Length: 352
Image (cartoon, rainbow, N blue to C red; front, side, top):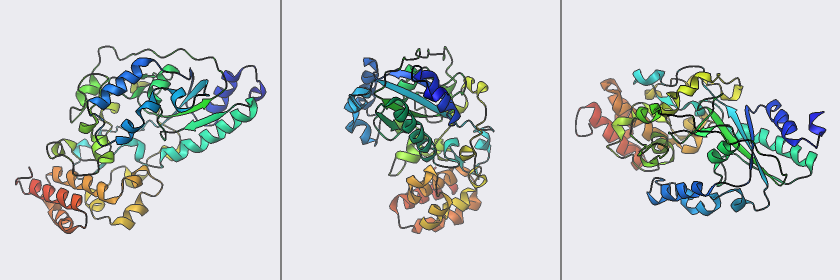
């Protein structure tokens, strides 16, 4: 049995991980090149992280695996495919509908991946008697550089990971271990002269290839940003109400990706093309019920309704005015601000 072959942990772990539902597996030393820290420092110095203070607060712990766990010898980098079965940009021409990022249209991937990662990590610890720590976007881990070093893919010009097998559609996770495992060859950059992702960004969030200013990124603005969305960026958001897939969706490497077969990542019907008018009138209880088990729930009702109101303001549909007017009296000032702006847009006033 492969799992009992202690002389070849690479093959056994890879086999076990694939059987557990992971789609990509690679091995890296527990270290990162110095330019990774330099890039992070530049990102923070430029203020590109916006309100994500946790990036700056724990920057020193992101320098490499040893900064987080000195005993770590190897990193097992893993990916789960969440590629959509349809065109993520199909709703661009339907302004009455809201666009939710592909990754958030069903179960929260953190929960799905973590459960399998725990089981895999426990098995590795039992078989080889080594220490392990698991991470699913929950600690200061440089996930994408580690995945690149492990050969899973490379960081594209949109700063996300690109895989030759899975395109831009991989959830990443890591197992740090005290077990010494021979590393895979690092993946090379295969972007070439392509700049499709850079040109596709609605808000021009890329100051240069391989650099992102989160303050202009729709994913940041609709998920991480807590206050009113800057007014100059609101018209550019269109009908995107949670995240943005534009730079991912246009990547030519997606032609090799196969739609995910993982049931937890298949889109729920009610989150595939939801009517903005229905979402705008959600109270907190209804919001929690609709998005139970979803990553969207963590954003909270107020921020989400703020996003919906921006989309309604961009819809050009005057029939939505009564819906927007209801929210002029909302208890949250950010929601009220978005409602006032949307009403101005729909009436062709100052908000436009």
